[in-house]
Amino acid sequence: MRKPLTFISGSYNYHGITSLTFGCENQTYGPFGESKPDNSKFYFNFDDGARFGGFHGRSSGVRLMALGVYVDTKVKHHLHPKINVYQLACGSSVAHHVRNV
Image (cartoon, rainbow, N blue to C red; front, side, top):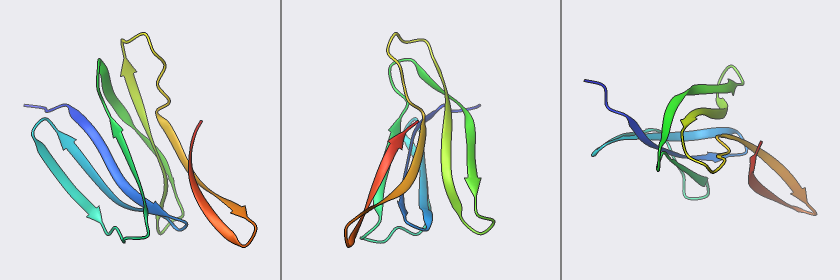
């Protein structure tokens, strides 16, 4: 029996995605990869009628650089399922941001 995906979470740094965790009903799978304390975290929850539709992404050939989620939704509000990680140089420091596309 197939269990619906309920959430995806993980971490990333300027090199790409460092870990992924998947949730299905009352079970968690992962984390796959390694998250370090200085990594940024992300979490995407499939709630209120949103259903997992599939993945798309980009790799450097060595690392997973971006991961997008296709969402099938029957709800009235708009979801932004594709998340890109990018760097923004701010003077001498570098800030990491998550951008909805």
